[in-house]
Image (cartoon, rainbow, N blue to C red; front, side, top):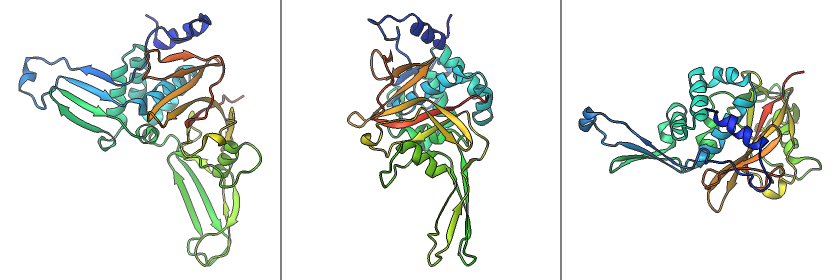
Length: 310
């Protein structure tokens, strides 16, 4: 039996222009997990025999991207095991490979999410888990310390009340420039977050110059990064860079998650062997091979993978 990834790659290789969709649903929205209970379960509480998942698009797109990233880069499973745990990575890949889509979502929910991050209730004989919300809360923030960065700054004024400061962040939030400069806006915004610079110190009554060091990753350059782009307007996203320099490492665009405000729904786009695909778990035909790279006008996040060292 071919794995899901092998099936997807085969469909790309053998596709015909009149049919660019994958032959079966992949990681469909929601999910139902039936509990195979024995006789003793009759007296157990709580009394439910199935688990129903709702509004799973807040994790679906990222789970699909994570699966593609792990399969396309042979060293990444070992690296990610250091952050997410080897047992989790192995189990995740096995469940996706074998089309166990509801189980892989439960793996993420129970292994990586805190209970206060989702709503759950027992209704009749079902435990209902509702993941309605923000994908960065439900996925990105649960990647342990994978993308943690730190930046130090020193003020030139010896009398500054806080002369030495450290700014540590667990995720990478890219804010749009307040002024519209010339050049690529995303690359400039990333440089503003990561590059060294000198600014006027903002401590009250100081007036000194504050020198910021280059922002660096706390645990070494991660195999991939997720840039939170949810505060950007579509008119500022006319050009998305296909590579970025982050803390002395080059990263290549691998995919993105997209957010439809009207439907409050997330989908994803990603590359396999240079071919772009669009994934939307809510649709009947939910994995489609694209003729060209997607338009990134409804961005929620950009995902870049670390380029191989030459």
